[in-house]
Length: 247
Ligand code: PXP
Image (cartoon, rainbow, N blue to C red; front, top):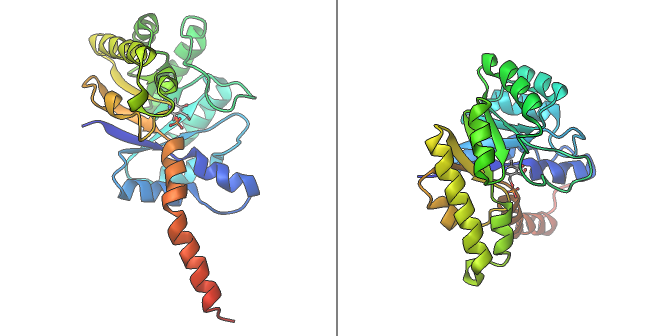
């Protein structure tokens, strides 16, 4: 069965919109674990737009599954990883004004930074996952650099079926095939193969059905759904308070 890593960044996005104490990503992580998540993922961005260093520290102390931290392969982030000691670091490309991660790492042009990160993080017991586009050349390079895990970028796959699988066409089949080929190449290289980005309740099934893929990291669509399925109870609780106020 495919494992689920729940990315809780956007719980912190809601909090940071008001610089308020709520909602707390640690509370969200505990609920996700109680609901069956196999791991918790956070992206510690250079601009700290959502997850803060203190969130990462508190999550490290609290969660009982695995902590996966996404980060850029640079010295400042290496120091953060060595302090917090997540179970896994997923290296991702990062640029300051992007709305979300744009594409996978180009391991040909970033080989030196990625290799240095792996060399320093491995002795600390941190497994390194490399977020790459589903391209066989990138998969082989990931294995050569000594990564244990690759996470295949499913953004193009997801964009091929923006409204759901009932509208699947030629580009969907091509994107799925790219992921299948890259996943097989990963397994042949001895890598653990994960995938994620842009996955939704509507498009996840064909990816979850691939036996080569061990784990999926899903964030935005789960948090988006939580906001809607939780709204009914949240409004009812406030209506109840207004109907029977206590001074
Ligand atoms: N995997 C990686 C490497 C990511 O950068 C992200 C986004 O933070 C995700 C998975 C989750 O993507 P989404 O929020 O679209 O589910």
